[in-house]
Amino acid sequence: MMRSPGLSLIFALVLLLGSAVAQAAIPVYGYKIVHTYPHDTGAYTEGLFYKNGYLYESTGQAGTSTVRKVELSSGETVQRYKLPSQYFGEGIVDWKDRLVQLTWQTQTGFVYDLASFKLRHTFTYAGEGWALTRDGHHLYMSDGTPVLRVLDPETLATTRRIKVTADGAPVTNLNELEWIKGELYANVWLTNRIARIDPANGHVVGWIDLDGLFDISQLPDPGNDVLNGIAYDAAHDRLFVTGKCWPKLFEIKLVKRPAP
Image (tube, rainbow, N blue to C red):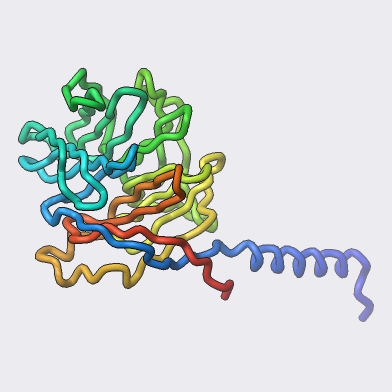
């Protein structure tokens, strides 16, 4: 039986498409530890960023939630604000001379003076608050769903939404966020993975696998004291990661793994 030219063309296109899909597999990155720093085991890390030599950290748990300014080298807290007991602190980000913080289920956010931690005002939002980061123009907010919100940094109103997908499937439990070289890095809660997200379309363009970085089984509550916390020093290209109540904060370099 003779094969028609049309069928041959379709067969060739299918082969090309299959090859393109194989080549488009999401790359996976491992890590190399560059340095370790002390981290307060009482800090249930929910938000983290680096600024001018210090880490700024938001810790969770109702009744013990705080905002902190932490010396990187020693892990010592040099400035602290304790939230009212009804609030469970979540993500934080700086914007100009302000610090913006979310809370988990109370639909209330706080805006502080960055220098003094004095409360300026509150704001509200629908749903849960998980994490915040920013580029030079917008804030980005996670709420545990596959959809990130883009906020106007002045009004804190949602201006658009980004649905995050990997190989076409939605990625849930997006938690702590960091803006790094034009990408959004997001801890995936209850895993040892960080998603690298293209903010233009929400596609995951890389996975960072941090298996083996720290053995959480030695912690008092390994079910909850999981990886969470990403900070980036843009001036010196330093990437920091930690977890809830971990005794260490790690500076790491990413190592791309060979394609399978």
